[in-house]
Image (cartoon, rainbow, N blue to C red; front, top):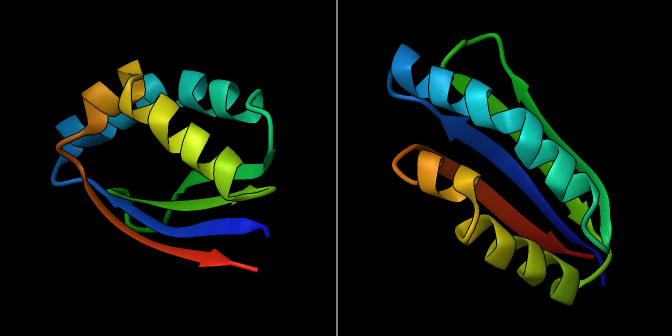
Length: 91
């Protein structure tokens, strides 16, 4: 069953945007290399403080492995205080 995550990463200010931009390239590269990652995009929207997030993993196990890696990663530590508004669906 495919797992999809969509939503937003909502920065409070320019400093948080800087944190996202500094760590995002490595986060994207590491995620794309994960087994079961079918799609992963993070893009800055019209509002420069908001990034849209879209992810798709082959199954729940791949999605959970991604979540565990993120929690233990530099990205996870650096962005832990940045607000997130995510929805997760399984097809």
